[in-house]
Image 1 (tube, rainbow, N blue to C red):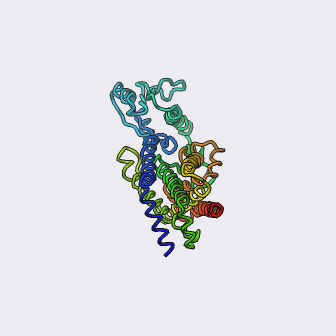
Image 2: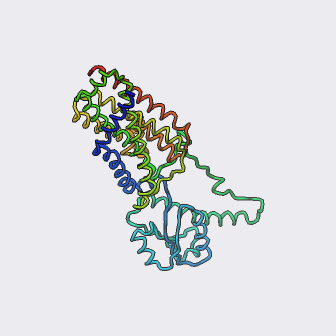
Image 3: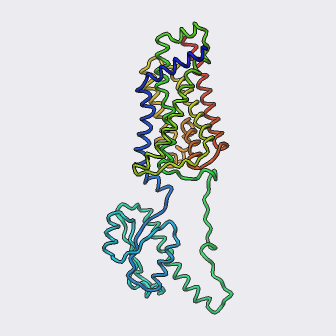
Length: 390
């Protein structure tokens, strides 16, 4: 019964603190919307190498048509053929397309000459980044050189049917090297920001927990509970359970924002073909670690103002170091290593395992273990300082 009344008291106090509840739900939702839309194109630089462009063929010969057919083999380079060069250049200038590739009128005539010149021209939109321009130019030149080399090989082997020239796939094999083969997928803006701000929101409970904790201590509530022989276990449990429920409601709301609201505003929708048991495990672990840390801070702070300031500051620092505000994938190697110092980083990695890498329960066990240990250590310290202040 003591636990029931302690839990009821805590729930009533929490529900009365409407401004804190609004901050816990509205703040991360706003961050998700703003950052998912603002950083949409930035994440595409890491996850998507697709380009759209126009082709204007001024040659109309068989060789230029063969060249166009070869360009179709690039699945990530999509093009449309236009007849009007000026219209194509205008569409590129207006940023509707990244490039206009012009096949000059003497393409078929010049292609197989040793000193071939002016086969194609490329018009690039003003905002296209240099590395994408180089990528596109290299792909166009690759197809031109393939046609020229194939003609040379054919002429050398025309009298010997047994000779079979090597293909490009035979000559070169390309590989990526990853520390963990299951963890190389690059998230979209929404896949990064929804999990990131869920984790941040869960840790932001520091402020309302500290406010309630210090208020109760100052008003003598703890002294009365102690006089009623209420244990520290009942006291801490009555605070952990309501806020764990709040954290799970935050999780559900933020996922709904990513699934439904972000795409309505033009962003990428969050895909939820995920392992929900794994999500449940990591979300409870994040919540436990966050609430434990909040109770630790609350137990060592003397005033509500101190708790609010230090709580907000610690959340921001952990978020900055942990890859919440600045994604880990754009950090230099040293900073990527330093993210492990932030408990938010472990929570975010667990979330990315689920939403981006589509992994299951076994993938989040280690992150969950780290967060639970962090929570236990925090609660132990909170208990120690609570005793000293009584």
